Image 1: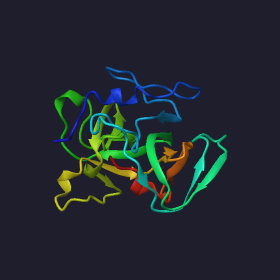
Image 2: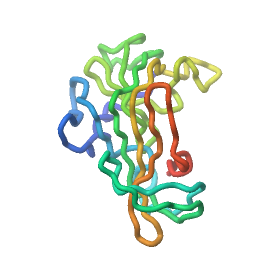
Image 3: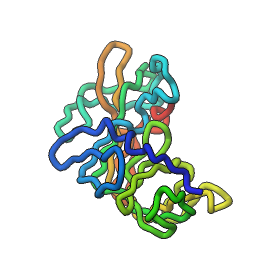
Image 4: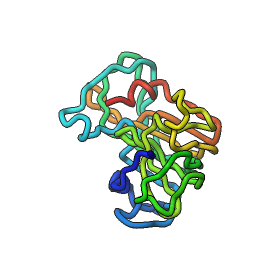
Length: 209
């Protein structure tokens, strides 16, 4: 059965309101969101459902660059050498074009009229490891491990993958850090343009609970 969370739309409560940007309604069917879609519940954001204490500092595993913002108007702040002690204080997904995928598993009746074989749009990985999808006016989430990419599923039993991404979109993922000396800023985690994907030096290491 396809893993669903009908409260997925609540994950979007932190969306910023701006031109060409929209928030996802909290209930019922809704049109696909306007682009770009900005979501601050991105992978790398502190998730109180997983860890309710103070964020834990860690050391960067590679040299990196700290910027003033994730936006296009950002300015370079400073270089961060390997071993710099930092604390995650936020993250953001910017979806300029959503991933396109196809439902490959059975659906809960609550997601009707969605059905196996329908196309869905994907909008980035959240702090709890789930990805939000939209199709036929319905929002739902699927755990990242249960998503195939261009037919490649991480399970021997392919039925464990409930959505297959057929066309990657155009997205960016940034993480907000605070250094031990009090500086704050953003590092690039991932930049995706279709099949072309580039990762920041500390993407995998910094995206953890």
